[in-house]
Amino acid sequence: MRFILPVLLAGAALAGCYDREANAPKAAAAPETAATLGGVDLGKPVRALGTEPFWGVEITPDALIYTRVDQPAQRAPNRGATVQGTVATFASSTDLNQALNVVLIATECSDGMSDRTYPLTAKVEIGDDTLTGCAAPASMLTAQPAS
Image (cartoon, rainbow, N blue to C red; front, side):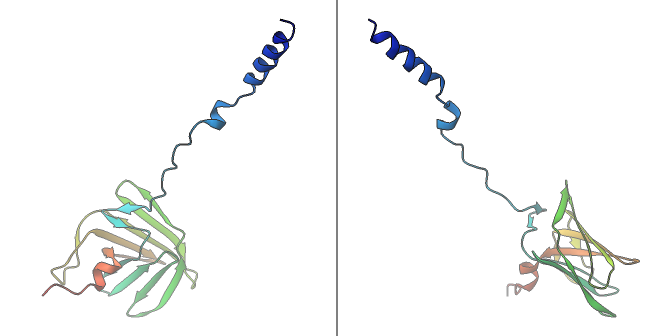
């Protein structure tokens, strides 16, 4: 009996050291997902465009590239979108030191010049100019229409 009691006490002491959480099965981590807006994956290239004047903004994972017929192209780093509900905002500053804000809204849009319907409405503020237009995945805009 004298021998059994110390063994039982030692076993009880070791049992108190067992970490159940450390030995519990780990839950799978949730996969990271890119932000989507109106069914558009904002982690992939998106193009916003407008008319009168003709302008465009290429949104790539690394940059926002603003072009307009009557002005030099401007490039800004893509710092990612802030998505709130049905609105995504990209805020940056161009290589010509102008604030560039691109706001995408999950509402269908027509450019007024074609039969194409875009999944997003776009508003671009650059310097003192505010431009409105449409946006879509770049792949949608480069795809050839079905014949």
